[in-house]
Image (cartoon, rainbow, N blue to C red; front, side, top):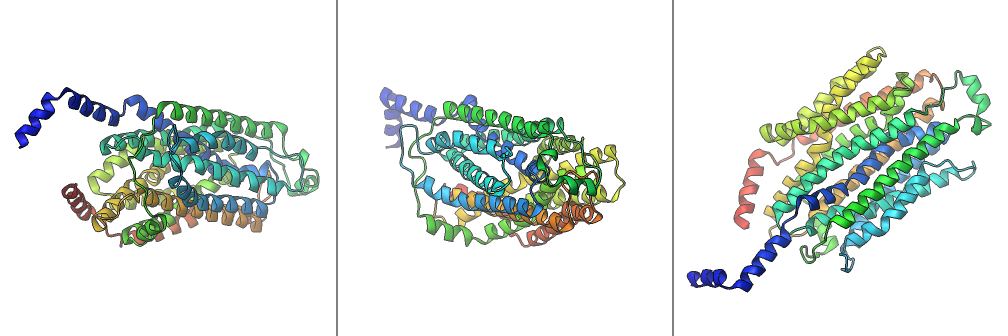
Length: 488
């Protein structure tokens, strides 16, 4: 019987044509993978620009009180966290259209997201209601970007039914996203850095000029932020256009599943819950560092004209270090890589606040610290697939929950980001931060040192302590891989 089937397959031209077309349809060309990968750049470019510079912009350019700036940062990030599972639910219920299920969300959200992003970096010509302006457009942008990024992430499952092709497309995507972080830091930092307004020499003069905000900020500084946001908006549109034109969404590759049942199963999986908590604490540490480092460099270290270059050195170093961490985790295991990567940052976080202010030493310390920061980019995303494999082995009848694992991980990290930014900016308010002051009170310098050194180290150590009980080691990972191969 088997011999007859083989003869039929080989002798039937129509069947041969069908098999060839099916295989060809599931193959992705290099061009398709590049176009898909380019679609991931807007999320990273805008995320880096907002993460490194929004706090500085709200305090020194928009001239907001640190208390109100903390509210804007916390509300915006918390709202962003809530929208992820909500949009994920709505996308999963979307009907199929002529251009697909995911691509319409990307197409419709892009122009509105670009407009709202640009208005975040615009200083309105009124004082009353300025806080509402920033909260509204920050939350609106986060919602619209979620409407772009959640369907984009889920689009991986609609590119091809072949796992190898999807994995290859994901590798292209991660490469472009890492480059996007460098691009976002470079564009925003270099354009804004060229228009740094001179600081105000003393608290007395600052207090005197508080009554008239228009003398506080140079017009060139406001224009620089708008030019930078305009350039990023153009890149956003270009990347979305390349994605839309270069990727074809295939129908019927993923089946729908009960949403709330999936949440219960995902959150009840022990290894996933521990991994989320681990990276919740480590992410809090890195986000405190990211959100306050620009302010620390310009205010405490006194590098007002060089802080953007220091940030760029960190991101370039992180980009160059990613292949090293990829090799390290395959050679020594992922848990070991997390311990080494996180601990390698600690000495340099201590050094940067203890040594006397020196620009060249700061560049060296930033470059070496960037090697450790690279582990924060790579390791969470490399460990999540192991949790998914473990879940599939323990729940063989429950499939299609991959998006929930990723969306809830993003939810918790974004919520942590909102908490860290809100608390840190509020701490600066209590310490007496002076907008654009050439010097800050000693309490502000101490607060910034705590926010970029002591607090991140404490959160990282808590996360590493919890990681000790994380059950998926190399032995279990290999066992899961073997079981999945047998199940297939």
